[in-house]
Length: 106
Ligand SMILES: [Zn+2]
Image (tube, rainbow, N blue to C red):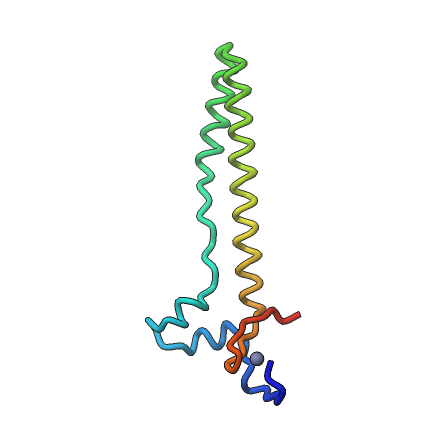
């Protein structure tokens, strides 16, 4: 921040971003982080497959497939949460037109 504080230099980032001309470099750089496109069908299918294998006496493969279902589900949940957090931070951020810097308003 410069020594001379002028409040009009610092704007709410989403408001500043909306006012930028479409196609500008800043519009792309300061855009809100995208949502994570989780494919929940992957763990869901692994879960169904694992149960089917266990029912058909392939217990070892079935358990292994269930572990895969759990890990892939956990991983997607983690990435979904991280993307949501990044979007929340963006929504709370301020942008300084002088520095220029984006920072989180607390
Ligand atoms: Zn500044």
